[in-house]
Length: 142
Image (cartoon, rainbow, N blue to C red; front, side, top):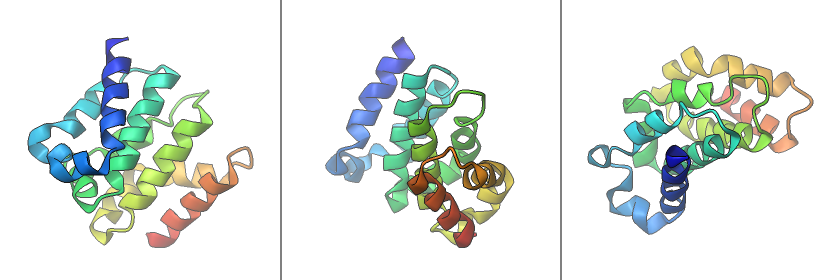
């Protein structure tokens, strides 16, 4: 429950662009380390908060750089492992990975860790249309 509350707080902070601009995603803030620690919690609500944090971080160049530098791509992809991953978590993870794919220096990490998830998402007719389109965009970026 503590991890869920921490994740909720970080997700709320990450949603504010001014906070992101003021160093929230800098390495000194340890946000990516925090995300990695919280991501081990497997309840749906906490996973959604973690995916939300990564989504907002990935929307900014500095955040994308930190996510890749601190090897968060495998953590992101792992959020969608398991039987009953909530659709919202998959949607946020795929969108975050798509943001990350806009930088060609991230392609090796994405290919190594996220490609199976992306192919599974594109092939799964049960996934939302926009999630599948983001997966296709990511694949095109690679």
